[in-house]
Image (cartoon, rainbow, N blue to C red):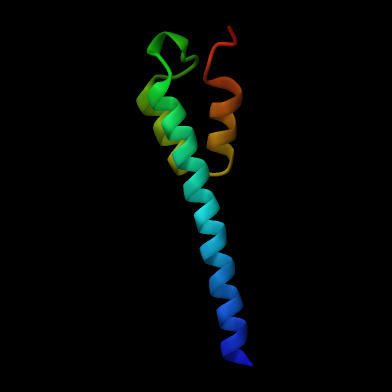
Length: 70
């Protein structure tokens, strides 16, 4: 019974971490393709740190505020 609970917990952690890594990579890939002139508020390096270090708020801030709406 304990082994089964540990397996479920491990699978849950792996799935959550996979989603975190996927979302961070998508935002970082978008950041890499965005021209410097289209970035608002911070520069590219600062946005990259915000995305990586402050999940889940960082990627959402990037998607909402980092780029000009043209």
